[in-house]
Length: 137
Image (tube, rainbow, N blue to C red):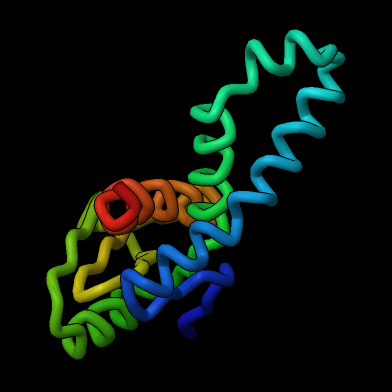
């Protein structure tokens, strides 16, 4: 049975940009609170917590919220048959499980045998870098 995990499954580049922008303020709060927990004073905060740091937090938050589908190889192949876009599959053909994410006519998938959480995380990072980063740049 195909399972889904995550919240973000945008239907268009415009929706993806809107969701990406929506996590910006959250990334700022998280970054500020982490810096506070690390004991940064105001000067150290201004020096070390740059726009690049907050952007990295926003990238990680967005990626971690991407919806992924997780199923057997047979379920994935059935889905793939009905998918009209390009789909890149990472990993071995000799394992039983596949996780995948599709966006804007493209999909990326990763195979795994054990460790579904690790597979979900890997797929989300790959999907962000390959499918979404070009939209946000």
